[in-house]
Image 1 (tube, rainbow, N blue to C red):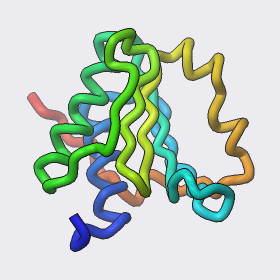
Image 2 (cartoon, rainbow, N blue to C red):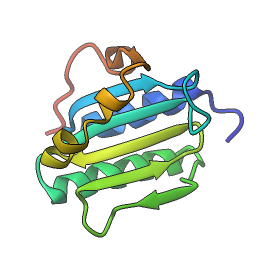
Image 3 (cartoon, rainbow, N blue to C red):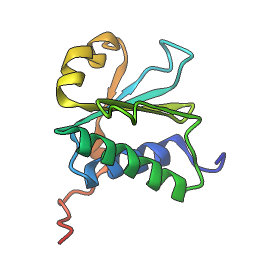
Length: 127
């Protein structure tokens, strides 16, 4: 796990979310604001089924790197699934739940990271 950079982890997480059509993927650097984590990754699905699938895809892709979450929460209701990777915490919301909690506003002092750097230039259709 130690030989995998934060950038590689962020890239894996963002690509996993994007591959399952997550909406509005955001990466916020919060390391200067809290000891909780260095980054929050926030995204949402349009149904509880998609929300759960997004979180499962992140877990699957990260486990392929040999990285397991320290803790997971929220799979039961699948309106807000949290995957805690220590330095990176992934929040996968159902759209209405995301709008309600508005973590982006709560962490607005954090630094927005451009997710495009983690994604291929051309959309890859997987048909």
